[in-house]
Image 1 (cartoon, rainbow, N blue to C red):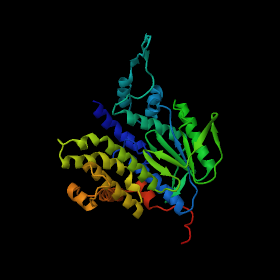
Image 2 (tube, rainbow, N blue to C red):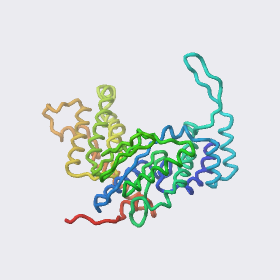
Image 3 (cartoon, rainbow, N blue to C red):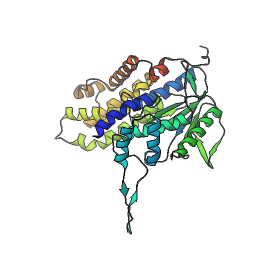
Image 4 (tube, helix red, strand yellow):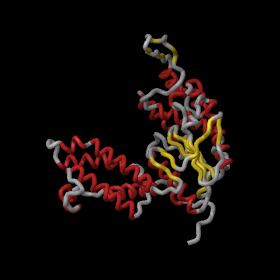
Length: 365
C-alpha cells in the first residue's frame, strides 16, 4: 500500500521540487551536489568572484515536522485531498511511552516527526522543506551566484541546506529569512553546527547569542570542501578511510579458507568504493595519480602479506593479483560515465554549472 501511495505522491513531489533539491530523487544523488559545489568554487576562482557559503544544520529535522502544519502545507502544494486523507490516517492516533529507570511514563500522543524507515517520509520532508524555502523568498531574491544567466543561492539534499551569495550581507539576509521561516513551522537551526565559509574578509556573526563559526574547509555530504577547491585534500582523506577498511579486513585476508580471487573481489567491493566516493568531480593531476597507484599497490601488498622491505617488484605483485582494471582506471570510468549521464540531460542544474560561465574576468596568462 505504501508503495502505491508513494507512486501517486511522487508525481506531485517532482512537480513541486526545484532542481536545487537532490535528496531522495530519481537520477539524483550526493555526487551531484558535491560536483555542483565544486564547480561553483572553480568558477568563482577562475573569474575572480567572491563567494560566501553557509552550511545550515537543523536540530533533529525529521523529528520536528509538525503533523498539523504538514497537512496544511500539502494542501497549499496542491496535493489532492484523498492522498492527504490517507496520509493523515497513517499518522492518526499514534502514541508512545518512555521507559526509565523508575518505570514507564503514561502514554502520550505523537504530534511531530515523520515515521522512521517509512518510504513516504523523504517525500513528506522534502515538501515541508520546500515550503520553508518558498516562504523565505529564495527564488525571487537577487542574492546568489550568477552562472549562465541563472541565479543560484541554495543547494539542498533533504535537510542538508547550503546557502550561497556573492557578499556577506546577502548571505546573512538569506540565512535570517530561512531561520525565521523554519521556526514558523517548528524547525530550529543548530547554530553550533552551522558553518560559514568565505573567500573574502568576513565579520563575526552572532545569532541568538551564539557565534556562527567561520571555517576554511567543511565536510559537505561526506566530502571535504576546501577554500581553494583543490581535491588533493579530499583524496588524502579518502585514502585514510580506505586504509581503515583494509585494516578491518585483516582477519579475512589472513584466512587460508578464502581464495585469492575472492579476497581481491572484497577489496574492490568494500575498499575501492570508499576511496572513489565523490571522484566524479575530482581534478586528478599527475601527483594525485601517483598517490592513487601507490595506494592500490599498498592494498595488494597488504592482501598478500608482503612487506615493503621484501624484494618484490610491483609488476610481480600485480601479476599474482591479476586485478584487471586499476583503481585509477575505475575512477576514470566513473568520471566518463557521469559526464555522459550529464550530457544526456536537458537543461539540468549540473550541466549548467559545469558548462556555464559567470560574471567577472579571468586572470592574465
